[in-house]
Each structure stands twice: as structure tokens, then as C-alpha cells.
Image (cartoon, rainbow, N blue to C red; front, side):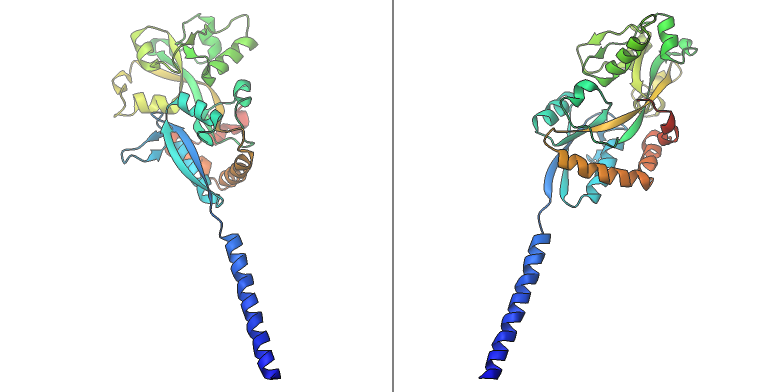
Length: 280
């Protein structure tokens, strides 16, 4: 009888131990939270869809690496327009959006800006070759040249507006456009305006690249950088925990040198080399 009780007790102990292990396993084996990552279409090399129909570009590649580091989340990339991205993230249709976004106080009221920026972007003026002596916004303003319209909700508008506030005696002629962006290269080449604000990566893909739509203008228009600016992902206001997780992951990626590698891949230069000089 005693031996029988010992056998039953031992069996019970084994069963309880097995149940304990199963409980621990079930606790750790939770499902990852799905999140939608919106990205702007047609902004090569920053955010676009490649020849295979896959999301691509600097911002997208960074977020793919972030996805690999975050076991608690699984990313779904959704290509869309700039306006839909901004509205969608604000309303919660998307949890986060990437579009080479600059920081603005107005956007900070609508979205969560994480602690860590996602990348760096060269902003400059597209000019006709004859105006190559112009190398800064100050030069452009001094000659009272005309600038292509920029939509008021485009952060590029904010950059020029901030310059004008700091230089009220000689501001750039800034005009708000109705559309988010105009065809800057075409407008400048045609002489409709003297210059336009553009991101270097996009200028290179449109003009310098042999497959670019405006490669035929490569000897007629030039790009003059006036600033390197930090860029950010925009998180929905309810996604603070997700933004915190992103912060940890992207900080690790930067320390590993992955972000610098991606700027070389997509922009042809390591923009992190000039990070100490970045003011915005």
C-alpha cells in the first residue's frame, strides 16, 4: 500500500511539473501584434515599390530591420499617397508612416515623434545651369529669384518659412501650392520658376540616373544642397509603446552601422558623416 501511494505521489508530481512547463511555454508563446506601416509611393530612393512589386527604399529598409528586431510586432507594409499616409496615421488606419518626414511643431500635435530619427536627408535647390553660382538660400533670396510653390502641409514649406523668419530683411519668395508637390525639375527647366526645393536622392534618380525621366536635362539643371536634415517616422498618438520599441531597435541599428550602410546604398553617400553639422 505504501509503495502504491509513493507511485501515485510521484506520478502526480510529474504531472504537475509537466503542467507547469506547459503553462510557462504558453505564456512565452504569445502572438505578435500586427501593425501597418504606411510608406509613400513614388519617392525613389526613399520609399517606393521595386521592379518585383516589393516595398523598397531607405525608410522602408530601416523599418524592415526594425521589424526583425521586434519579436512582439509583425509589420505589414502598405504603399499609399503622402496625403493618405498623413491622414491614415492620424486616424489610426496605419500605426506608423514613413515618407522622409521632417519635424514640424504642427505635426508634433498630431503624431508621436520618437526619440530617435530614422535617417538624414539632403535638401537643396534645383536650378538652371546658368545659376550655378547660387549655393545657398541666402544667395537665392539676395537675387530675388522665384521658387516653385510648396504645399503648406509639406515640411519643406516649413523649412523655407523658418529661414524667412530668421532672415526677415531678405526672405525667399515663398508661395504655398495647392498640391503636395509640383514637378520641380520640369518647372525649373521650362523657366516657369528660377528654382525649387528637392531632396538630393530624388534629384539623382530623376536626373542623374540614366533611366530617370529627366536624364535628358542632366546638362541643363543642377542641384545645390543647402541643408542636411533629420527625418522621422510618424506614429499614431495611441502607439507610444510601439514608438518606444522602435526607439530601442533603431538605436541598436545605428550603433551597428546599419543606418550608415543604407544611406550609402540608397543615396550614394554616408550622410551620417555630417551628423555633427546637422542643425534641424
